[in-house]
Length: 409
Image (cartoon, rainbow, N blue to C red):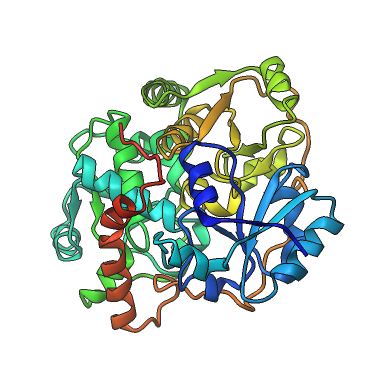
């Protein structure tokens, strides 16, 4: 039988900022019905595929719970060489019985953090109706879509340009060179719009910047028409704009307490066998495929902030980011630091010669996947509104949970 650990000891470890790898072995749809804030999800049949990249330290403690398959999951991890596997005493029911919070949906703590940012900073926004009026009136605006390109191509605002989140500070001035142009940042729901808008504000971009309140969900609920199959991508930037963006991003990262390291210092960090280390290349997937540093995995910055629980499921681990422009790493790092991570930016990318996918984990299929209310074009209005209502309540739920350790600069 696998040893157990009481929920209060897991909570104590979270509060102490120790490394905690809390793993939910149910499928994603079940996971979305409720889980501890910092739990990460992997189904039984994906353990062998995902374990090495998501839980890279084989002697780190793994804490499992599920729906009756915990012992089988524990055996799979042990077979892969993980030496300290435990079960959450009482499982999810035990967590609830201890009086601790359970969060719905996926990527919950990143979404909760985004709500906290808006709550603390008053991130400005326009309603869907206001943006529609600006478009109809041919106002001087630039609509920047902060999602992945495939999401943008599926459905987007009329006239929007694909600028995935980490690219915003680097590219915005090339798209809207006139400081009088109002920049509107949108995503499908709320989080990436809030983080993207606040990124530009934090970086001191001179343009007025607003989020599209509630994203394409809000647009749809307002009865307005979305575009499909759009292909407008961000432009390249000249050297002066890139240098300006780098200075702005470095200042933001400095305010957030992000440290910079070179290759020699990275070697010293990587040599610490007592800590889990994640190494992410936050550039676009296309740039990563052309050339990247050995040992780094592709995690475009906007998605890394949105899906941190998937990319880095060991809470309390170290994260090192790489980016030849610096801007994307610094801005991404600034958000991860505010989310309570120890994050460092690598300044020396010489020798970045590997090409290809870097050993990317094969993607999951549709089986067992939770259908997000902001995906696709055929979601019921009631489901979309319920999703927004859930997001609005996350700040209060964070306060009740008390383990998050977030701060907002």
